[in-house]
Length: 362
Ligand code: PMP
Figure (tube, rainbow, N blue to C red):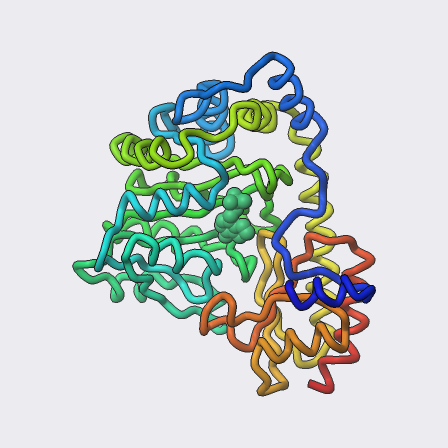
């Protein structure tokens, strides 16, 4: 991103496919709700767990979407899903503990774990197993110091959804699961399942950044067994106190309001995904995992020995396309490059044209 931005500052037109951020504006009704809340003077400290209206909307969301009962005292509204993840890790692990996760992983995960003095324990996945976390491998990796397993479905960077059978088996391992469900709502051909359908021994993380195009609002939540939610609240009270009052009012409006805007955004991503999957399949030397959700495609460059960093460098220099090298997501990401399709179709068409010229010469 930095290298792309330097080029852009020098006047070069770059296609930005490196950032994991919706290209849509936050829906109008959500913005209006924030303005209304500010106009009504809702600008004061709130309950550190979040305003009741939003926590109830989150409980209703679980009931309506997954037929799962979540009580208000299980919900903590956080300043985005990132702090929710950090708090979840801090609730379950400390110095010398381990947390299981797949490789490739969302680049921040190992850092959330290291911050509390614990160690990420990586389970490699790849194109061969469809980037699925094999429950048998997870079972084998469990040691006395393993305190939780961190899963992400749909996943960043692969776009892969964990099979329901895997979710069920992973839930039966007796290990607490931290389930990052931030890309729920952006699922194309698979069925989306929250881990809470299969186990109560879980902390679920979600938020508004992706499905509602609200990255800058910094609003998310965690849902956990009540005693863990209570501990999580302590971390929150002693750090940010609470999410912002009028932002939370906007979040409640997002969940309670009409969902047609969200469906329109998802439909646009679905169209781009179809276009990219079909077009990249035609380019020899590229192999794409099945993208079932999120807005990423993670092709493997099969006809070159160059590293993902070198490939991303060439794509930037020769194709003026900014991407993220697979190595940023772990050793198992080597040989892959992540493209975000949270961008205009025109840019994706240009990307495919340029890839068709660059890939054969890699
Ligand atoms: N989890 C994953 C897998 C993500 O990709 C991201 C953002 N890129 C986050 C969490 C953080 O999102 P938020 O804006 O809610 O902090």
